[in-house]
Image (cartoon, rainbow, N blue to C red; front, side, top):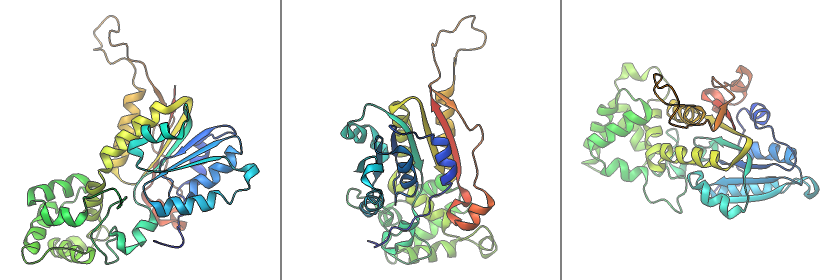
Length: 318
């Protein structure tokens, strides 16, 4: 655990603007973290509002509670801080006993605190056990198990599909060969294998050579893409008419799911164009607010490196 849950909220001003929070609203922060976004959101909700924060990480929840409870009680919204995965949003919101919500924020990916804690195994820059579980208390599958038990074909599929890694097949082969002599148990050992697999000429550009492989393993461990789709669908179901959904994504796989989900729910009649009348009866559920993703300013990227790849998409419930 860390004594201080350090977190600089990404694109805070833009998120607050798009959420359009008002007193009395019910707001869900689906990825609470250290409450960087929620602390400012709480100021806008006031004592008549409700703030529901969801996170798998007990360290994050504890830090968020301390921060949010520092707001004077006469200006603090009702707080419901729930430990869980936003993929289970239906169950979590039922437990919070709310009839509906007015705004929801998803800030996807892994937090800077998780990356900076070597024992969590997320970082390719710090040596630690190959874990990568968002919720170690409830999850059993680890990155170490994947690296040491998946065959070369499955490793190739995961690394290629979840990171667009050009050298996925070669990395998988090197992993299988290395583990024949001894299990790969630490992030440092995996970095060595990946570096050896990627030709020197290819390692000179594109950032750290192990970045993509670590991203792919993290996504597989936590079923991130499946969970994201479930969470988005549930959030839209719970939104009141006029409610806003705001999503910050950090890589193309996440952004594609958000874009496709919004487009699907905003689509009207899907009948073939040659039919004289509509027979599908499909009505749009969302109105897309941001036709193109909103990107961070150069100034924010300079202040907060985590914002560099951020994309924000917004939609309104009809």
